[in-house]
Length: 334
Image (tube, rainbow, N blue to C red; front, side, top):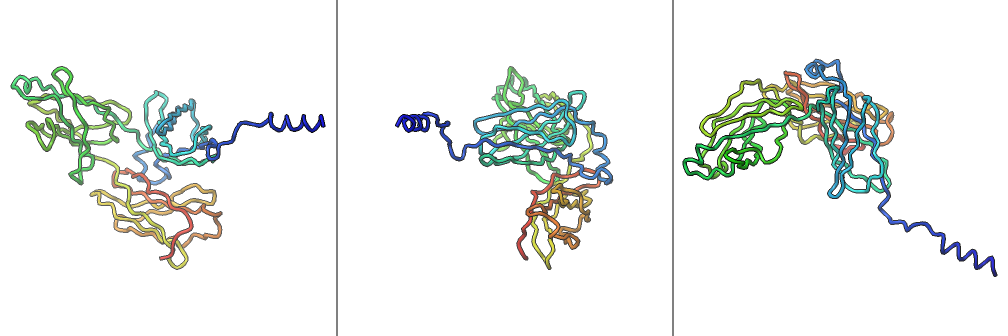
């Protein structure tokens, strides 16, 4: 009787903490890959001047939590592991710095971590954005009795369209300045300031031409009766091909995508996973081709879900777009 009572006591009193289903912490294993996937290709020659990466800062954030991890020194090819991640959707940002602590490369994506998952993720890193700091002296407008307490900067990121990205300007003293940091990919841009905004303006500036350089802050000071014009060369990366799909045709994968309409488009890169699951450059096609039939691949040689494809575009200046979303086997029949 004594033994039975003691056994019952331990059974009820030595329980572990309650298990909450669906709340197992996960782990993220992160690999970085530069946008140039094949250094011997001519279109990547412009990218060859990149300095080695010395330090990497990874910032993963959800609606309630931000986790930051810095790896210094960083060895290219190493896997960065972050543990104790709650299940849910996370934004993953990667900032890479060179030996001079200059922010040089950047990547961002989202990932849903399942309960208890050891998630592996490949992030393509490209040139880091630069920052624009802009001010406009509106003292002449204020002296004339106009309300110049707010304005808007319209930045035209794509010279092939009329679409603009809008940034709010607020008044400090007698100067309008950007409210939030303005981060833009490296390149040359046109912009225009409207007071108070484009649809209801009493003042609009001349067009402003400015350069954005990776990891640097470019400051431009304007006045309400003149504009600063800075000469530059437009050489933005081409757009990412849209509506990428893979279907089976005659037993082999057939890739297709919408054409990119950039004026200096040179062609498209086609990527396929190798048997280890790493994406490598498979082929290049001309700018007048929007399909690729992979007749050489032997699907049986790949483990389940290891066969994947992606496409990017490149221009005559050597700039490479971001990749399309990756698609993996199995693929639908035509």
